Image (cartoon, rainbow, N blue to C red; front, side, top):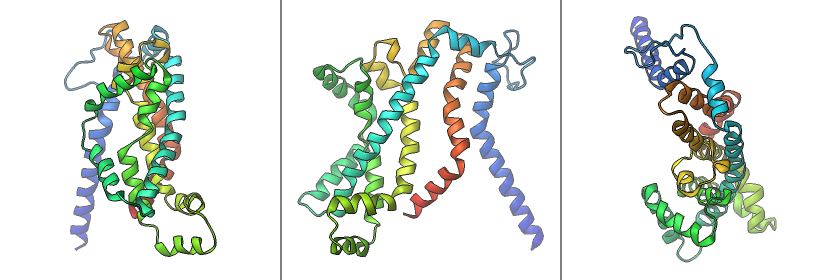
Length: 275
């Protein structure tokens, strides 16, 4: 019996290591390519992950060839404005769909839900036409406004708000709390784990946004970091090492945030699943 448990545990560890290698492997290849010298092959198979010797010249080249610092600041601006508004709008939209009875509530929810099944590319032309009519193309607002409404965020928060016990809400009403007070002081703290998960997903989505900024932005000074890497491709041509270095720089904020908030991220995700 003990032998069987040991074999199962070893098999589980082997499986976990294989899955970890599957996800971490591409990043290691990317980091290796960014630190290899020009004389070392980056396309060899099997991949040689050890730079001989390791160099940092490609990071300097990627940083100076294009205004990389400006791109990083732009992405921070997009994230810092978009994610809080995205959470507020999603919560304010999801709460009535979950807790307030009104005519057509189910229809509205089904309409929001149906948007989840539409390809994102389908909305590019309508968004561009709307931004053009509003005179917002090539502005920060043209990137921020379409990102503040998410059917996924509304769906997840609606489900979380629906799980709040009716007794808690009714007790607040008996104590004289109005609907907004119930929303802000009771409902929002209860669904905080779901809000945390949405904040993380929103951060990653906005930080990695590429297609829509490429369509709506023409000024290099407004490019986010993902679009800046594409611009680096046009400047440096086929310099794979420089592109790898630029990509590693763009990933560093996400990696740092995950390392700093790893425990909180896992706890919030667990709480959201329970909710």
